[in-house]
Length: 566
Image (cartoon, rainbow, N blue to C red; front, top):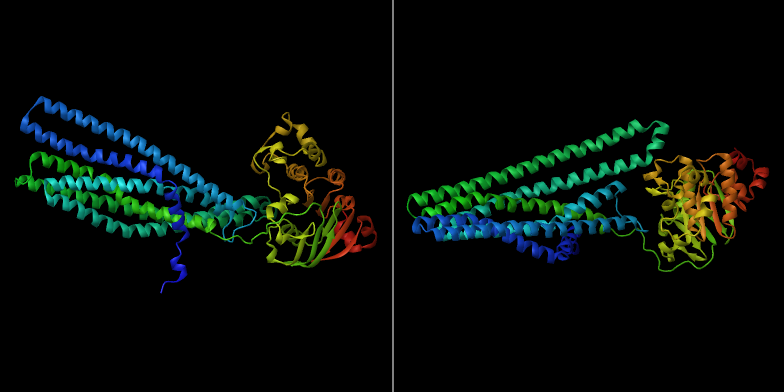
């Protein structure tokens, strides 16, 4: 009895089928043109055989001129059909690869994470190499069909000369493909393993780039490099294995094709010697035996490329077919900026409960860094609502009932390690180009000295990850971007850890001034931000243990004083 799992097509197969279906037009034209190319190539030795036959029989200059004209037509057809056929197929291939790259990237950038055990480096490899190899199926199928056309034309032409020659080509082709189909399975499995190991190496690189600075800080860079060397060496060894398998496959294909060509040549020679075929037919048979090696080699290589494309499609399916971690609601937050955390339990947070009315500036002093990170993740909806106990309400509505895009438009959570992108200061502050608060955000974040330092001002070029900026400049640039967004609720997680005390004091006052009347939450241990806030919540051991102004807490809570005083 067939189970439902076996009845359902595999996602990798669905991806290949989709790629083929939406490129039917290009593949049809490509198949026709490449078929003309292969037919023209096959016609060339046939024409030579006929020329020899008629020249020896008629010895006419008119026949010779007609034969030369026919050869010119064949050569022109071969040249033009190859050029335009490959142009059509390569354009479709490139376009299809781009579509899959965009689709995989879109899955990676969706507000709801996919339930897949892949790191960013692995997703990057899938979006590049696997997308390209999957799209190769657009070229593989037409080339396979056109190669089959060439083999069939050659078999028919040889069969007309002598049935045994035609049968020899057909039987030999079937035998070659049967042998190579077995080898292609080994190629596919080896390629899948290589792709997985390369993806793991890519993920390790991404992790190292992200954590390079802290690794240097506590001296862990050597161990990290050894870890990368291990996974990269595994990828290298697997690549060598794949190269050996591919080499064995190519060598076997070439040897079998050469054996078939030799068999056709020897058989034709024996038939001509025995007087069963003419000299012209012998010339044709020898020419076809030499020519048939190329389409047979191309035809024999196709199963390998199909297996590679299938392996890549199955890896893409890991991302594209993976279900979302959670299903968000359809609603949007109501106007207003109040936020409520009601008995949330997650990781180090236990029965966390507090409320921030609209328009208030609240600072949360968290004694355990992990608790601060988990709270920020929950508010950023990086943690699905069903992954924790309790309820988060935004403007009186449960976050589980709201669209994640709408939540993030309404409430911005700015992480302490906000990414800086290649571009300019302006494009980093206002990526959409629609904010009207860029000057105010620059001033409030104390980014004015960076702008004034360069002749280009806000158009000063920024390298990827802010490589040409200091740590404090990157942090202030990230803060300026958060302030320029001007959302109803703004959550800042340690926004001033990389700036000096004087600048931190000015930034704290500027944030309080700029965000007056709008809900602002700062998860921080900065005395300046704690002092600028309307009130301070103390989060210790997963619960709120104290609530007052910063100065009152300094005067009455010794533990708080020791934790935040500098």
